[in-house]
Length: 544
Image (spheres, one colour):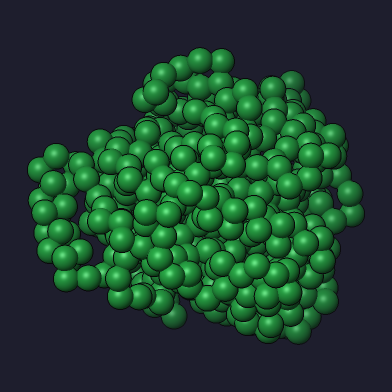
């Protein structure tokens, strides 16, 4: 490999995902500050990213997807789980289901109670609002004018009305805003779309500022390690094609590579426990035992049924012909089936009323879902996801090798805490009650697998055969003050200078819902903290 000249910036951000794009925008607002954003993947400017219904393409193919696998999961009959993560500008916001959910007030109050000052709900709400442009209007919980467009589902399918009618027949509560005063209830999701197109963080935060002379964005840049000199992060070494490059950071290196890649990069840099580094002949630079620990994720089971619902997504001769018309509708009006995020409705419910917040979440999907969409079935149908919102199981991320191009070792330890299994079984049974309600009688077809099983033993066996992630891994660079914490409440890596982690990996506990909006919030708050700390540092230097 060849080496090239070294470029110098004030800030170097590793990872152009939901957090990285947000940070790049906010930090480069100051024309006197130079920012470099490194991304291992490609551009987001592709039809498969822009068209919401094409998310399946990037879920299955690895062109813009890391396509990770877990180690065999003891709780899942030894199966390996699938962990798709966005590998492009915008990261997973360019391939996810676009659902805008913040979680419950108690999630953030709990973060603060764990010793993370400044992270209570009242502290973070302004940052949720700062990024938001909510088409449905502003109020105490929502704002307009921010870069991130939040819109109602543009052309919802008829299955949503059936689903919500079924919920009403079971006397389940309704809500018209999962991010407002009360999360509990069933309703339609809002999505990060604008004019029927996906509105990823690359479109929201990067595209409008790409012409800033103080912002440099480099794609195809695989980070090899963070350079540490005298306990300070001074730059990043990355691979571009066949050459190794180095960028220097005079102020800070900010790691925003996500719950899997951020701990991997720290370990590749010699930051972590010796027993995770020694097997790969990586010299320990800084002892930090929590790096890669505390991995957890929302374990999820999918119930699927054949159905004659004409406006659902499916595979049939008539369905194929209909898609021609839908493609024209999208092309001409940015309307119709191609605007779907698939999981258009759902909700948050209590299994245990003693919990501080709803403990299960449902996503109603206007298609058959099997093995993350990788297994296709002829015909049409519908599916309903049910996931455990605050899992007790904890796993870890480690290295498979010292080669940065190799995937990290991912072990979410799904269902290893029996309480997660018990809650998921109860959640499945409640979801089955909804699926059996009279509202579904006109469309209900044959269940797939054991989706309509009546006994707990069969449900448990089916969960172990089919359950997997709903794509919300967090916690591997935990924020806190204890021995296993990786960053402090200002997201600075403990014991080092000039290095922060800003992404979902810092969450001490996963929020009760989808993780994209909270990740953007984390970056909005971090940008302000970085700016504040830079001013303090400048004043201290001036005083000296």
